[in-house]
Image (cartoon, rainbow, N blue to C red; front, side, top):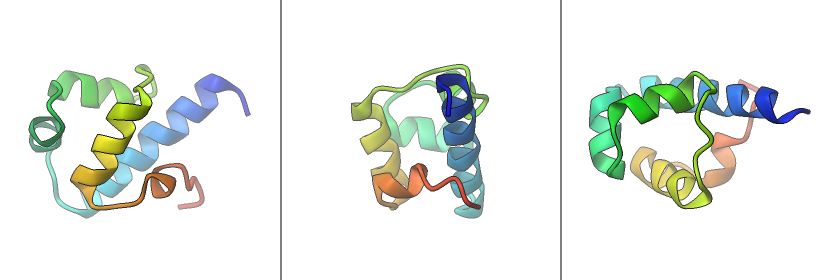
Length: 73
C-alpha cells in the first residue's frame, strides 16, 4: 500500500466516522485545535497529520486510534 493510498483511505475513514457522529468539520477542528481547512485536507488525502493529531482526532470522535486505520468500511 503506497503512502498516497493510505492517506486517502485514512481521510475517507475520518470523514466517514465524523459524518456518522453528525459532527461538522468546523466542530471537529475546534475540538482538536486545528483549522477546518486542515480537516478538509486530511479528509481529501492531501494532508498527512502527525501522530499527535491522529490521537486527538480519535479522542474527539470517541474512537480508538486503530479504528481510524480500519479501512474495511
